[in-house]
Image (tube, rainbow, N blue to C red):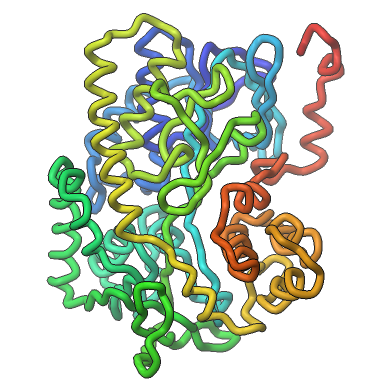
Length: 476
């Protein structure tokens, strides 16, 4: 699965999850030569993460993956290609990637006329005392280990955070033989009742949730709402207990409700953060979505604010695999610039709108209020890479006069380490806004999301990939 430097395509699709797979199939069906580019060697993304020989047990909609995987197979499936930068050229776009050949990192270029960005999202984290201990995982990390390697993160696991994603994580661990101490949902899913039309229009979602609930019931896993892990305890060997507490609607701890639970692992997730490095490199407009995350703006055709850039899946709003599949189809059809069937487009758009309405209801039912900032102590680490505590971030605001996250980054270094703010960016923005007495804005999150390098790359690979004709006017 490789390509020669500078090979050209009509369409390049970034990301081989549900959105990217659907976009690739739709684009190719329209007659466009389409490359599917992904850093992983297996297609499926996080939703369909799997091992060699996986029979689909434990996966939802496995036949759909089987169909899509067969349809995208071939020399234009470019797995193991990490795209670290995309630039617009006079003839379209140039993707700068690295791949491994004979154990060496080799730079490669892929050129295309039209681009579909379907890079997905990763776990959004909130810090709490002890969250840096060994054995504290993101919910997505726990699921990835289980799906991709058959490894459970522990023997006695606490699952906590907010959102429906906690259910499949806990159900998967329980089915794998792990003792799940409990699922602690910080919010109250009863918020779905405020959106009856969206819920009734997506009864399949209810059935899926009911399936997870039956699994938890069968394994006698407690499910507690308005409850959160507010601290983890342990030492050099890892976590050995957590403190959970009841919360009010603003996520402030109800005094006297704290209790300690023994465990050897914790899986925590507070929704997802879209991967926007590529859209931001290309100057695409962004906005603050209903769940408080920064997303790229897509129009009715799934086109970004920049011409010939199309978006699908979580980059334009977290909404799940079914929505990603529909958006991927729409993006692929329009990106191919081929003939379009009005009836097909209308059907896809209706389905997209129905699923997007459910996503909005989900976000409304699982907000992230500011009360989590009160769980923190001054020495709680916010930026793990640079070991920046809460006190340093607060001092940057109260003593040095910072008023937004980017300035705090320059003064106190959160987001300056290896992950470049992917883990701590949201929390830093939330803490800064709280200290300034206001809500988080899109500009706050933009200050921690813009990265000129989307994937880790060596300077040697950058130098080896330099093209001496790059600066010629005719290449622009």
